[in-house]
Length: 258
Ligand code: CAA
Image (cartoon, rainbow, N blue to C red; front, top):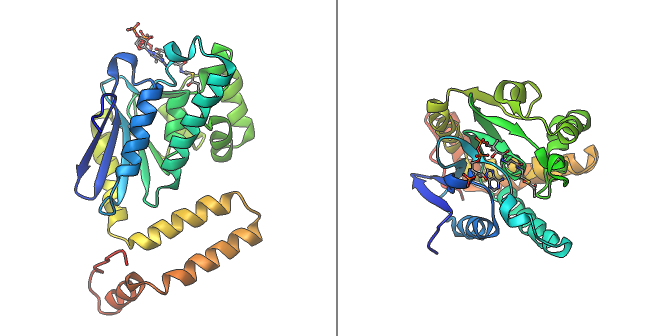
């Protein structure tokens, strides 16, 4: 597929997906979602981490495309919301770690995109928020739920009700972003985090992601059962034998993802 609104690049085992409509501050229209969906499905097994960022100087992603949404019906809004949910759920379901490099405005659907990633890092220039109520709507791509799970109900409601744009330092303070770094260092920072992860057993990293994600929606006993299963499953892997043998032999492990 020839992408018009995104870029998908490979840097070794790291894929970089850039939402790239700088003239519209990378707003998400249907065409962009379809390209993202295609890009996520096209990732091969040699991709072991994904960084998501925004093209241009100003924005990560400024939200759903307001020009596209302005005149749609309720039925079309339901479809648009379902499309966004599908893409962000696919992102969340990837068996590899995903990192949002929030390089500018992450508003509405843009913040929802970041929330679909496992780890969120922001540049000092980033501004984050869910301004939907200022447009007479609410977030439609999972923001009400993922933000609440990440920062708690009261902080989520505060952002949702006020439509405030917060800076990166404040976003870190409330646990929305993990680290804030100078703009020119953001991608390197994300690559370094990805490189650290790549040294570890890929099956184990995938299993860690799976049990955290699925466990978060369950009571503690059921969630702990998920962990027990995940732990045991890994003992059928070559990576487990290699990881432990390498430790005992005092050498670095050579994981194969098998
Ligand atoms: N949709 C469509 N176009 C957008 C856009 C969006 N979300 N955000 C910015 N743009 C466009 C602007 O229309 C403008 O285009 P023109 O040059 O053709 O006029 C261009 O990007 C630059 O924007 P501004 O001139 O407004 O630039 P600024 O620096 O003054 O402000 C901004 C930047 C703060 C991001 C501002 O553009 C803004 O507030 N954008 C809207 C943010 C927003 O409300 N997002 C939520 C959308 S609703 C949503 O996401 C719903 C959902 O969950 C499903």
